Image (tube, rainbow, N blue to C red; front, side, top):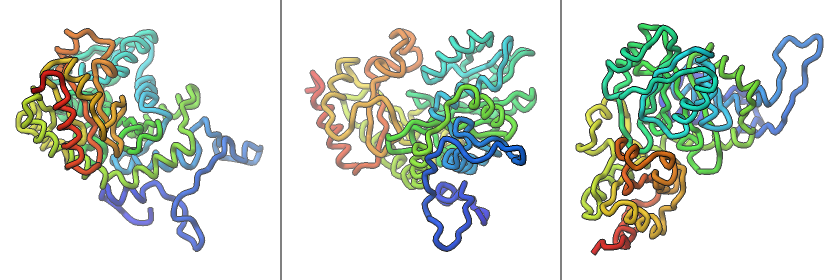
Length: 391
């Protein structure tokens, strides 16, 4: 950009644009649907341009845009959120190295750490992030990174990353934060001591449930290492998906305002229903991290957890009766989506393990969309009435 924009509303629209505003130039960037580019001759001095290397203009543009939103030196868009997570962790570690991670993680992230990193000779120690001293106690001379997910999926816990960031700086170890649920509009981990931020762009960044993508943002040198692994593993973002992601981000700020508003209102509404045992949302005073959320978050977010009385039977009856909200395993779209963690993100865990994490059988995760609030209330109301034994 030719000016110094600071607000997320402006950055979401204009950051990453490099084309001059000459007469006749398109306002909307074009999709560059090319796998390869001219070059590679004896007189060419630049790097080889090839889509698998992440050099497609659409992919480059959206990576720069998310980096600008996060306040990071550099950003790289990839083919999925798990690609961003896995390549970032592989860039940090080698055989014999060690990671310290929060125990509150998305299921696939934990599986990657326990199985794939272990297969490569990397050991991971999981700690309770509620106790900052646990991070220091878990450190080893071979520790190469610290990892957190904030807010957590699906329990929406927030843990103070500031002391962890100070520890990371003290030891010269990068702190990596998956901030998918927060988005750069509600939460910017780099402001609180993180070094690397990861997003599943499939969710709120894209915002329309029509693409798969991921982004890693951080220091230029570390993003370069991730880019090097992209060359080898190949999860380059398709040009059209990158274009869709860029288009989605343009409305991120206004969408998040509505997500925040709807979820906050529904959290209060669910709290008044007798069918509901517990409502989980950072806006509520009974949320364990309510005070911390006001320090870290600019908005409470569009994710909502509801634990229904009656366990699995109640949760199943509720989701099957929905007419506006849809039962689907993803989140962050303009439409309201609900899922049952016991059958999706946490299906590999036992009931005892899930209950220890705060995910009993009656847990329903709700990704609140931007529909009319009264329509959502009516839909949820009739679904609650349909629960067997609801009276």
